Every structure is written in C-alpha cells, then in structure tokens.
Length: 306
Ligand SMILES: [Zn+2]
Image (tube, rainbow, N blue to C red; front, top):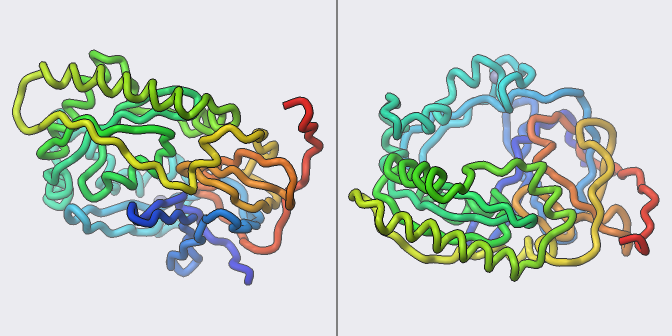
C-alpha cells in the first residue's frame, strides 16, 4: 500500500514491559500513523518533497495530557523542527527556563510539578551525559535517546528541582546535557565494547551521586537504579561488522530491512545476507515521504577491509 506525502515526526518507543518502537508519520489530513519498527521490518520510502517541514507545536495540559497541533501553514522548518510561529506557540520551549524562575502556563506547571528522575546515560562511542525524565517517561526517554547503558541517580519531587540537580552535575562533574544524534550514529558505526561502556557509565554515575549526596537541599533522594535497554537495541550496541549508511536520507529513494534499533538509529540490511549499515532514522524528522516498495542503491563494500 502506498502512502503519499506523509510527514515524519520521529521514532518513538513505548511499553517498557514489552518494548515497541515506531516511526510516527502524519498524513495530509492531519491523522497520525505508526509504522512499527521491529527486527525484520522492511522500510521503503522516497522523499517526495524536498526540505524540512514544520512539525507543529504542543500544548501541555498536565502530567499526561497534551495536544499536538499540526502546523496550520504546512510551513518549512526554520527553527529546529518548527516554523517561527509554531516555535513561538510551543509550551515545551518554556521548560528550560522554569527552574531559573521563568513563568509557565498552568498546564505546563502541572506537568513540571510531577516527580522527575535524573539519569546518567552513555552512548556507543563512550560519551556520557546527564539528563532528566518525567515520572511517566522514565523509561521511554532513555529508549528514545539510544543509550547503551544508563542509570538513574536521583528522584526529585518536581521538574524544577531535577533541573537544578542536572545543572549541578554538569557544572561540577563536567557531564554535558546533550549529545548530538550524528555523534551517536557515528558511535554506533564503530561501537566500543558494551562492557566497557557499562563500566564507564557506572563510574560516572557514582561520581555524580557523590556530588548529589553532599549538595544539600530538599526535595530529592539519591538512588542507584539501572535502566533496562530494550532487546531490539542489543545487536546495534554489539560488535557485529557494519558500515555507515552511505546515502543522505534528505533525498531520493531508500529501502532496507531493520535488524536492530537503538533510539532512532537502525542497524539495517539492504539485501538478504548482505552487509549491515547504520542508518540514522532521526534524519527523517520533518521530511515528507511516500512509503512503498523502494530500494537503496547498494554500495560496493569490501567486507575484508573491516
Ligand atoms: Zn509551523
């Protein structure tokens, strides 16, 4: 079945008990559809309109309630994944100033006042970051980030306290709050051994916990709790031979079979029993595509060189 001109919103993970991942797309009428991404899923598509398109904005009404309002202008994206007016209307841009005293609407305040978790996550090239997740997104957030290993290090009463703790860990332990998706994809193309990543994560988490233990202040407790990586990510985080996917996803036709998925980055084969490639499906965010029986050009790769 052919779906024409669908707008990609990204890769989403759900259900910590029985993890599932999907590419979420929106049709021209504004309806959403999830394309399940599992081991063996064949994904074929063609970029149907060039450029990056606005993903609309969110209105937050409470801890679990939010509306996603598609872009009324079907505009090009100018600021990240949004046009100027959708960026200005988006509640979530206010999240990052809340702990510095910024004003927020009541629905967003209710969302931010729920308990939050502080975590330390490590990626395939060994880079490690500190981050936050709301109680309801505790597991999902790390699945979508594509962590190889991660630990929760504190539970905070609300989203203001957790961001103060996050800033403290960045300042005193030197852990960044963001790692670029392109760096994660490059890491997965040449991953460090998973045991080494886990050991580094344990060490950084312990260092950050030690800081939090002596920081003083109320409203949080230090914890030591591992995050469970979805089994679908195991192969991507492992040591099998692979190559960076050689074609930009911004144009042309592509088709591959998903073998494994870490966050939004897939390990995929272009043909049966052929070599595997690291494809950053995050690059499809904001693209308009037509799904169907499409194929990637198969590059000449010499396995013996790797
Ligand atoms: Zn817009």
